[in-house]
Length: 344
Image (cartoon, rainbow, N blue to C red; front, side, top):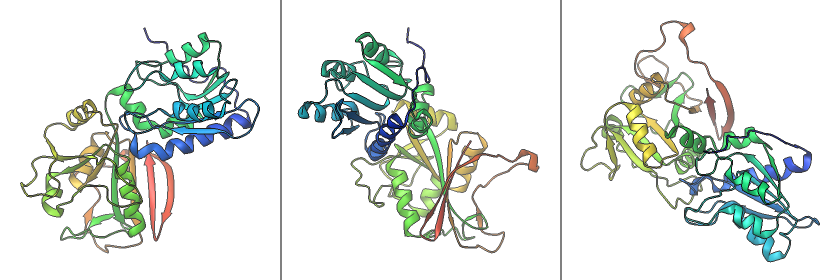
C-alpha cells in the first residue's frame, strides 16, 4: 500500500532553503516544454563546504532526471558527499526509462534532501522519501510547496485523476469579441501575444479545436514561433471530422461527450490540453466545468457592436448570481496587449 502524501511535515523554510528551491523552480520552468509525459523538475546540489552549486533539470523522455543531472556535476567536482540536494518533486524510487534517483542520491553520500512536494504517482508517493530516510538522509518536505504545486498543476491533476489539465485560450477585444461578424479574427492581437500563445502550445500535449474552426480558418495548430524550438509537436485533436485537405491533418478526430474526450487524451499520456476554440467549443468546455485555467489575450481594440462574435457562443447565466467567478492568477503586458490568466 502506498504511503500517504505528506504535505509539509518538518518544514524548515529558512532563507537558504527558499533561495535554493526558488532556483530549482526556475530550472523546472526552463524544462517545461520538453519533458512530458514526465514532470518538469528542477534540482540544485549545494556542497557542504560552500562553493559552486550544481544544477539539473528534467531532460526529454529517456534522458536524465533533474536530480541526476545535478548530482553528476557534483560528483565530477568531488563535492556530492555531505551535500544538500534540492528538488521540486520527490525523487523517484522505481525503475522506469531510467534507474531510481533515490539510489543515486544514497550512493553519492548526500546528507540532506529538500523537496518541494510529494509525487502523487502511485509508483512513488512517499516511497522515495521513505527510502532516503531509511538510508539515514535528512529529508525536509514542503519548501515552496504552493509555488511547485502551481508549476506542476498539469502533472498533478493527471496523476490524481487520469485526465489532463485543460487550458482555454482566446484572443478578444476590449468589448469581449473574438471575431468580426464575417468570422475573420486575424489578427486581433499583436506579435508578442501571438508568440506567447505559441509558447503555450509548446507546453501543451494536445490542442483541441472544433471541426467548424478547421473549416473556417484551416489552422495548422503547430508550434512555430515564440522562441521555442519544439522538439515535439502537440497532438492535434479535432472534435468532429476535418476536411480531407485540412492543414491540421494528421489529427485525432473524436466525437462524443467532452469528458470522454478528456479521458481518451489522458490515457494517451496528455498532461495538458489547450482548447483553442472556436466560440461553441469554448462554451461547451466552460459550461461543463471542464476548464482548469483560462488564458485571455486582451487587445486594445473594439468591435463596436453586438453583431461581432463573442468569446462563448451558447446560453449563459440567467442572472448575475449565476456568473462564474474565479481568481486572477496573473496579468502581464505583451506589447500593446494584456495576457490575463484566470483560475478557479
